[in-house]
Image (cartoon, one colour):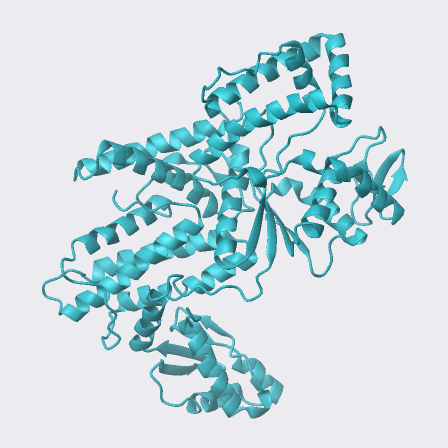
Length: 590
């Protein structure tokens, strides 16, 4: 379908034409249009134009208003202050624009004409280790950005850079060699994620205890690291068993999070082993990296340690081992050179900012990043407990992610059950399923409604509340609309541009018009909290609409009922689409 213009773009065009007519020497001038609380829109561009033309801005503003021909879009234009234009659009323009959006499956959201290829690095668990609350944000924020970017036409390549390499595997593999049945399963038995993690935890604790107490086992484990890094087939086969067992667990957790994770997208540290040597060689030959105290390092003028000396990025250690920098730089080479990325988007903890700043500057010096390829960190803060400190159990342990998800689902299921006792509309299976959707949605929304870089408090009671800025509030807004639509009988949604709109109808309609520009802005700035804020404001406008405008009232003329059904139906579709972009489901009944 052809692009659906927003009210903002239509008003922008009308004003630009009037500016050119009133001040021809200005050429194609930008009226600097923005949405306003004082009117529907405000144009601020005349002040700069008047200054450039050495004219009076109020006089120029008056000329611009006079140059606008009679039309069915602009209802009123007021010259305010030193030359601002306060613009009110017609009710007809609002309904006509929304009708065009309603006829579009994409609700008027255009494809980005400059779409390219983004490789997004998110959800990075570690092999043979349990996922904890610290893994939540990368997964949730990354998955939302995948949906948003793909919806705007970007080619998105997912990368889950799992921790699947390192010295700890020498200890684990050696223990498995000496205790060969520790990861065995009964033939034909389906292993749950919890069972897989339980086996891995048991093996890790036993191997660590032996490593710490037995010097001969420690020596054999270190030899096993050398065998792993040199590609010994038996060692690699056993390493793969740990990876496969961990994937059973990973995938079960992501399934609980209602997130898709595909095997080809899991490309861990080990995937770049074959590139590490060459990465170091290229950096050294080009002079980007130098040998310092036996290590291959990259130095930066503006990065110094507490002692005032330069802090380098260590690409290869003095003992010949490779650090994270070598792997991350090799990943940059792969993602740009082999995957054809225009953008590298890393959803990683804000505390890693300095590391990635150094990696990317090194990649730029080496020519692997340039003006045509950008690297961006979508940095996120910490999940805090009610005490404002990093979220821990009462015993001071890191909170297991599966426990967190289970608590949210149980609390949400109780809320859904209590709510349904008033009406008795849901079966037990529906209560359980909807409780899952509400609980997981609550966790995701609490994360996504906060600016990613900020820390946020994990407050389960607030997250599953029916009131305030929560996903449950948005889900119930959607459910309420679906209920009205089911009770509408023969009345169908239909746009009636000829009707005069009530204030609450206008406010709802104008906010619906902002959906496309909000999605585009979020995709460009990587700020999903702005989409969450838009959806909460939409649900709030809907609440005011209900308070002031009855939909299915016998006293309303049929065209008023149809127009109001049209407005709430488009609101439901917008809520549904917006929540889906955040990875949150919208049940039909609650």
